[in-house]
Length: 95
Image 1 (tube, rainbow, N blue to C red):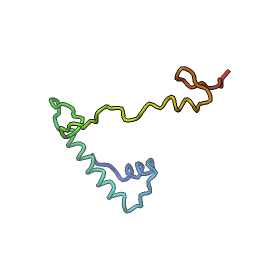
Image 2 (cartoon, rainbow, N blue to C red):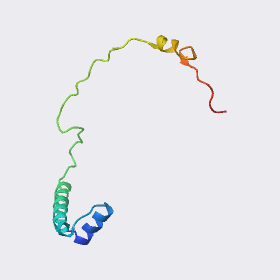
Image 3 (cartoon, helix red, strand yellow):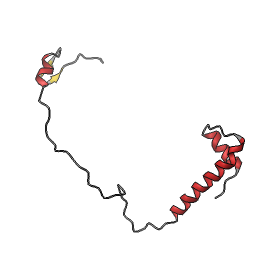
Image 4 (cartoon, one colour):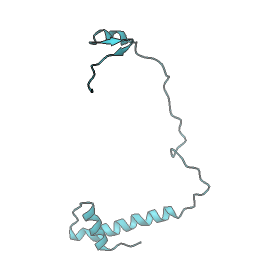
């Protein structure tokens, strides 16, 4: 699918890119080659291929789910202006 220089200039204007006049042809050739690669990729039959989440079959290393910090809720609530039954009490803001 070949594009015209006017289309490239319009795309550049929409993308707010400044393309000097001598680079429009080079940009058109570059974009046409990229669209050619995309067309080749779309032509590949992928009907019986399962989608992959990663290109390699790697197992994620997971860390142990272990508590690493002590419970300091009582210490934090001791310095709070108001706390009751493990909750922080705050003044009513909206009537």
